[in-house]
Amino acid sequence: MRSVISMTLAACAVAAMGSLALAQTPAPAPATPPAPPAAGGTPDKMPFDIPYGMSIGLEQAKQVMAAAEAEAKKRNWKMNIAVVDTNGELVQFERMEGAQIASGSISIGKARTAARFRRETRLFYNAYETGHSYPGTLDPTLTASPGGFPLVENGKLIGAVGCSGGTGDQDAAICKVGADIVK
Image: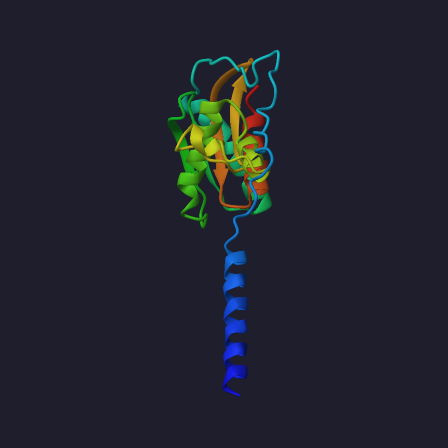
């Protein structure tokens, strides 16, 4: 009886040791590394090549602000609205009654991003949404959220407007009204 138990234990030990050896077999290496993502090609023309003009002044910033605020009031959306110059420096800021406090600095960030990069901030948001994290490496103050529009007058960048307080689409709708008064 003792020999049957000894043989059974020995068989179990051999099976256990064999399964441990198989468990530590390394996985095969991939045949070829994955290709790097495309950089988008080489366009013939420089994208977003809006020349800089004279920075927006206070009076014109007030007009942009008034148009955006009127649209926000019409829709009953409480917004923070910022207008910046070509350098992204604040010219005019307004927080409507009851607007989300945290959105003040966000609206300024959206306006600054739109001015410094000469494009709508939604483009950076879209890049993140499609899995491209590179915008975060461009500038630590970049705000990748809809609601920032460059202000272009006579084909030249004079500043930007940024809105925050609602959804990204709400912010963009309000800012677009402000941006559209500058021609």
